Amino acid sequence: MRRRHVRACAAIEQVLFADESPWPPAAFHSELDLGGYYLVAVEGEEVLGYAGLAIMGKRGDHETSLHTIGVLPQHQGRGIGKALLRAVLAKADELAAPVFLEVRVDNEPALAMYAAHGFERLGVRRGYYQPSGADAYTMSRPAAATRSQEDIH
Image 1 (tube, rainbow, N blue to C red):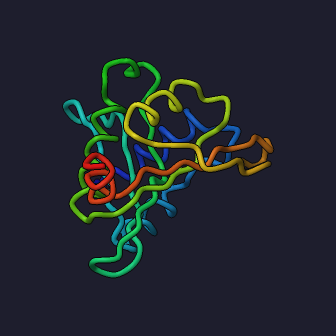
Image 2 (image 1 turned 120 degrees about the vertical axis):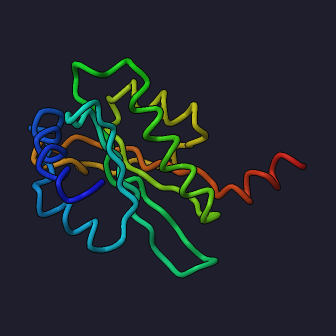
């Protein structure tokens, strides 16, 4: 993601998350300033979707959090979200870092996609999404090295 994409990503947030405090452009700029790993899917000049991975900790002891992911409704079902997710997960794997995220408990397509990519539910955050008060599952995916060790046993 480049700064020129921020306005389009914030507009997609408005479409997808209008009732859940969508990110304004300043939030995307802040994440870029903090060194987050943010990607966009584009077709021609149109931004179709985006994903953002926050990277915390120091080298050799990173932890990551999928902060946001979204695809314009008219482009959903084309594998764009999966491609974006796989790309940010590849970055987490490169860092040997676990990935955490929150997702609405009623977002069945997202829950299925995350489960298919190795995420497990850790718990529920009551009233996580505001202003609606919707609950979220906290989910995690172990670091690549941990997953490899689990495969051995």
